[in-house]
Image (cartoon, rainbow, N blue to C red):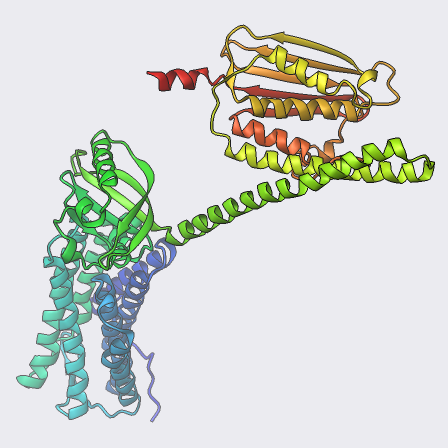
Length: 602
């Protein structure tokens, strides 16, 4: 038999008002959530809930507007389809809103929610559930369930689903230690869901099945009360807004970093799961215990921790590395970001620390230090062992030059001597790199005039020295303290480069050495020449180890690298200005270590 589903009587004004106003409200909320609220599981389930509810209300309106009873029965089956989804999404929303999802696996939810839903949908499509329809002066059509096993099972599942949802919302509302905003949200939801649940179960399940009287089809209309109240929670109390501050507990629990909060007496007030896992304790084992005594065995470190806690009282934050002892007695290195912890009135009530495990990094550092120490020992030993034979070769070459008469043989001997000398110079510079690294004293009184004159004397017989016009300008008035070896190394390499790379086409080649003191007692060492210069494309590379800016260079490529390392060791700055064919200017700024010496003398 063909049923005209949309043969409807729109003259039934009351039905139109009771149906389509709630429909408009629920579908409007659905659109608002879809467009305005960030998508999460909670917002997703709630939006599907109000959509299914709106469709239920629409279909119930069509049922009451139907002209023929056969059409009304078909609309009833469509209604049941949406009611099942209202219960499903309502329960899922309640589970995720109350954070019960963290205690119930998805497999359990599938068994108690999804599987029954599928079975009941099949029963509905196969017409295994049965209903009767009667005419009504007020509602036009009232559909009553027949007391069959399948029909009753479906209605019981729907009723139990509504009751469980109601129970979860009230349980969450009454839970203590909840933020005020979240309490208001859950209270509104619980009240809003109580009204349609009690009314619906009473008038549409108990009346027809228990008392055998006609049901009153008002559940869907009253369910709109929940939608309206929920919308108030959304707009006024930001129920579905996603904000990290609303999810503080979830964020803290899922962090990889350990969080520890102690009061001003160092008693542990809170530790997140990551911190507990880090040190192998359950929170209850740590709660109210003194954190310093529990985790730190080193007495000096215990004293430092007390000092850090005092700094928290002054509202100071800091980062530091510390070694803590686990429950099993193992040692773990952590980097800690410590900050004051405030109460709601802004008063410091303790300290909060974010802890990251750096044990693996520390082990790598220790291995690296060990490897570096071994490398330094090797370089010192290798240099000592190699330079002895090299010195012998250089000596023999010098002696041979007096004995050998053959010109070609003498040329070969000079080539041997030159290569040997180059190797010896490279070894000396490698040793210097180790010496620079190990430099720890900066209390030498520096006489720049004597130092520069001594350096220029060393180069007096260096090839090309005699072609340069060298001028010095030294204006240092206060005592300057630093490390003599490091400053000698800087001057040696920069002067040597100016001599080596002077321009052969420049008839008035010069080298200017200026040492000037500024009003902060810093020293500016300026080495200027009009040599071949350095291309701008390689100026950023010249301080790299073994880099040679000039292809024809016969040096080791370590000179400017050593200069850079010396400047860094002295906490100074170096700047280069150079133009190919016009020359270079190296400017070095060094701090007077007299300031540091005075600090430690008192």
